[in-house]
Image 1 (cartoon, helix red, strand yellow):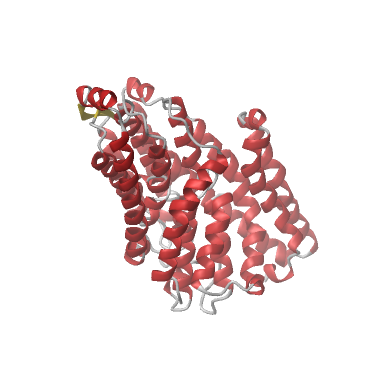
Image 2 (tube, one colour):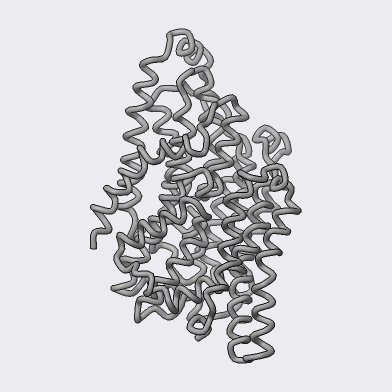
Length: 444
């Protein structure tokens, strides 16, 4: 087994890739803005993995062929991953919610609750891009609103997406590796309900408190300018339904391989995306301030992530037990802590590989369905999934939509907290919530 003879030094490209993603926007923001430099970062950290596979092939052909198999598998996963995120991002960008509701605490809480549900259908990125501007527009006359985009990041951009593989990238990677589509909704409804419910309750109390401190003039202006919600680009809701159907119906069948193995799912996604571009008036995307920047950034960076995480998953599967992480609570907090500062998708795969290595009836890190079905492995994977998704909300860099929402809020005149100011909010609101979830669901 390759992981048993692999040097820990091969973790360096993976760590370097993730640290680059985490630190470059803070220490070299102008340089990092250029997509070319993001591609160069992926190439810089990913190239050693290709060299490693080539050296193995020339020196130890058996291990070399195993390495090439893992690279091929990573390439297939990458195409599927980008096809899903790209189609959801582009199609949801063709839906424009117009109108201006009265910015009462109940209305704002309902916005977040709807976003938490919607995140499971169109992803946390899609739901965030669809709802953040209408929510900001609804609250533009109020003065005490700093907390609103922060809680939006908590609920819509992160916690809400726990129930389906479409909801958040870590869960889709699990699905690509054999976890059944409905496994998360069957087993994680309780964790989702407690996490989302507690944070929504806290938000309502805070928003009601601030609403009571608002002066009469902005509240009167808000009421006077209220207008019912309307939708343009509604055809895209049907196309989003088509994406969900493609994921469920056209995914490859590991037990009975056939025509669906040849990217039928991804071809359907691309076709639906092209239909969206054809059928949606350009004015709708203009009004949404739609651009391809976020999805091209994801495509550039995840090429490096998918390559560099190959040695990490092999090492953790073979040697992860030595780290002493054994209980669901430990997996929940370990995966969550890493997801707070690094991207939560590779974090999920990394810890799932470690759990697989510690579970006798897990067939391998690329066959996580066996881990999900295992009596000993299932509690570990549930904890990893919950920690990876939920704790991406702890910092601005924990999940892709977090920075997008922050940028959009600042463009709309909302004063967002600094990196550490945001962590003060997440520490006060989210960490006690996660302790509660640990006590209820992950004590064993």
